[in-house]
Length: 147
Picture 1 (spheres, rainbow, N blue to C red):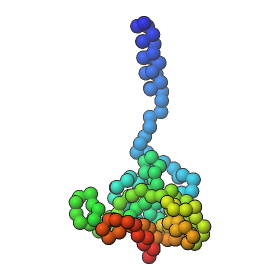
Picture 2 (picture 1 turned 90 degrees about the horizontal axis):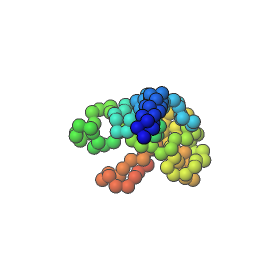
Picture 3 (picture 1 turned 90 degrees about the vertical axis):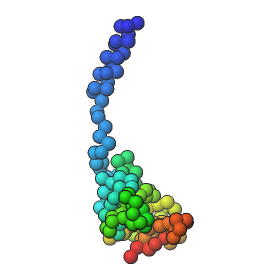
Picture 4 (picture 1 turned 30 degrees about the vertical axis):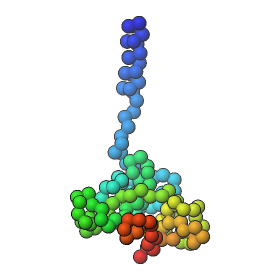
């Protein structure tokens, strides 16, 4: 009985010692369909600094993120974040670079225009540059065209 236990412990220890270590903070490469300018060092709710063009990134687990300036959100409790700082937020699935107005797969889809603007799928209108924001009181969603 003791012999089987020692052998099992030795086998388990060897398996753990030979297994490759997972590096959670190691940047990962592009995913199929990722547009140019993606940040592969993004973290959900972390500060970011580009929310006008080339806003997309991937988190440590590969989750799609977008850099947005969000009024009233700050890690230090201010009414607004320091000037020039946005935050990484979850993004719908990213469909690479698309032409404005071209057909798209439906709601909950994001893409990037050839010149780097973020775009959303607006059904029959196709891909449109802009982003969704909370309403004035945090309720509902409003589409803001890219400027």
